Length: 238
Image (tube, rainbow, N blue to C red):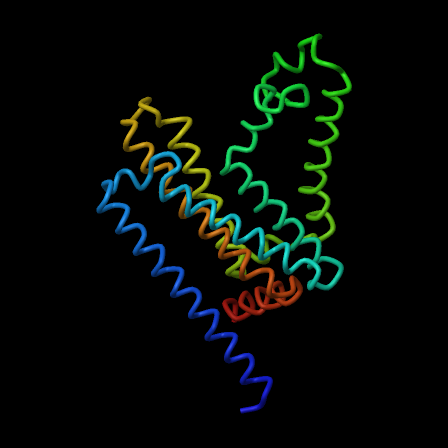
């Protein structure tokens, strides 16, 4: 075996070993937590499920930021930057960063997401404008990279690209988590316990799938993924 092939094989087995170790760690900790506190308590606030979600988002964000300077300029770097921003924002949301930005936490520099705060004449205009600028920068960080990358989404979806399917299905589970929490949960259409289990369970699966998508997509060029998707479509049509 050539030195390059041996090195690639070692990296492959290292990735497999890390994945197995992570899966075993999650399984053992979940079992231990369930035995100690009951399986329902896996899904309460700040418990096992939320810690796994935070770990997944941080892992994906770190991977994307680490890959960013190692990614060729152009579409691929824009796509990697977008994934890094998305996962970083999801990690911040998982830690309820928006709560710590409130005036009762940040004092005179805090921001409230309620309309009453924005209409309050006692709040300095400069502070409001500063937060508008911050929000505009974050919005640009989400939109500009996609405009630069221009992923051929329809081709990737129809061509069964693993990365885009993992991301899409993971996003669907995250939406389900929102539905179970805010629209039909909290005792509205089902019990509080059931809605909490479904919410946190869905969000855990969603975070894991999106993170897996990031680990896959940041290792392959977008052109290669689109070419592979086109080849699969041609093969299906033949």
